[in-house]
Length: 112
Length: 109
Image (cartoon, rainbow over all chains, first blue to last red; front, side, top):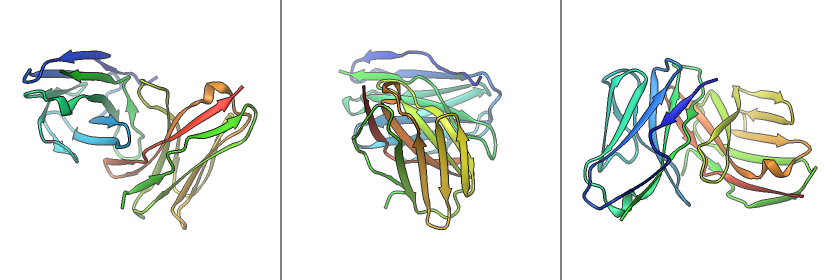
């Protein structure tokens, strides 16, 4: 079974803090993704990576950065957290062409 | 226009009913289609994955793709209260995935 794990299920941070969200997959997938999910807005792609040290901006990259130093690990960084970044953050991974995405359990982030 | 459109529901059915969930999409380059089930406060779980047009069955679930009309469906037979969740459809074009906003399903005992 594909396993995608996220470092925290719930996180509470203060405005201005630097926040790290980590994602690890154990299936040697090339592609990894970060989404945020908000009521009424659905899933929105923040960043994705199709190889180690490679990254591509998604639809809403502002206020976020990512790091992929190892194939199995993809980190999302909120440089200076703001209240409008309160959301459910979902990590996903997939093999190359022709493979579906597999999601992690999500991190519910609350920024006060 | 969103790449994938999905009625948000909620859809409420009695236990044992056949459920039909539907999506339309606009990008004719989509080749792969997925259905995910998401329980409240959890990550989406892959239910079905299909390539191109046709039907795919897995237990009580059947996924159907009609590329000519850009229409994808998920049928759930003998629905159970444990099927109550939000169902997301998605299409894939190369390395990008496009999701519907999800349909909330409630199966009443």
